[in-house]
Length: 359
Image 1 (cartoon, helix red, strand yellow):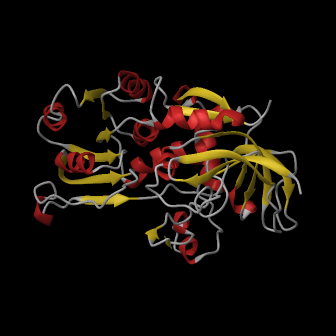
Image 2: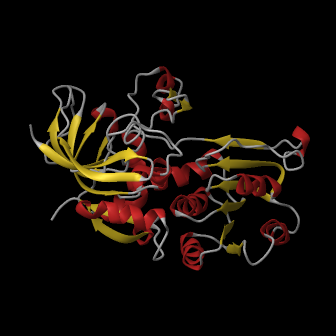
Image 3: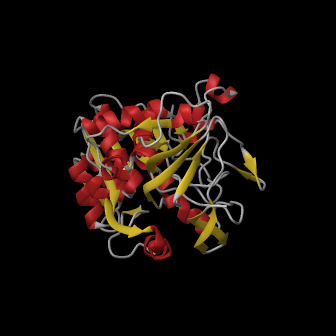
């Protein structure tokens, strides 16, 4: 049986590179030879035991690669074609898909934990931090990469770009809106770019890392606030002349950032939550205006499927956004354990790591 290298969850605080069998595929699947992938913040939640997965699972959900083999029922693609697949891989025919919410096409409980719907790679099935990946429901999820785009240009599309943009989309950002993005990690930075594309004219980024605040300005932030240098809530209210923001995008997943987003909303504003939370959230009485403030709190898992990937690659191809600078480090798959150590401990200004499987 053919073997491949894969990053495998062994136990809490241990993801290691092991040899595993190359996946078999069914008639509706495709086998992708991975050329480039990444490590995501959610993978760190897995590493730390904050999000449970089965021992022995291959981690990773941001695949860029080449079709190695197609299932007998997969039409519209060819072997040897460069493709991406979204982190979310809906079937297209489930109840969730028929209701227009393909991102939730999947199991919703596992190990007594609320699972993340249509997120399968590196969650409920083997993922992309490997030499090969089986893509389920391939006809609905593969998307061909335009010949003029590199792996690096499309690497953010499967998850980070899609998730960040969805924060602005789910928040209903409109032309002329005032938006705050709380936490300028890769997802928050993509939320800044998404808010600008949706029409926001004042975008406030909140963080404390200078490089991330500078990157936010390059991607569309009109103001940045260092939460360690001032009271960020008071500063945002000052910047908005006491009005508050139309949309607050929470991109970290902690109680303090969630509350801060509530506290800067205008009456009738929207909190769009992107963070992955590790503990129960509490809704503060004052921030929620005792339930009488017409406040909306929305959350969401980024859309999946080939149409979402096509649209995102169109945005990249026409030059509306360039996210290559988010990749600060590149490692070979053979060195992925070192890459995990760097990313988990946030050393050396790391924002996003590209993992290359080739020589």
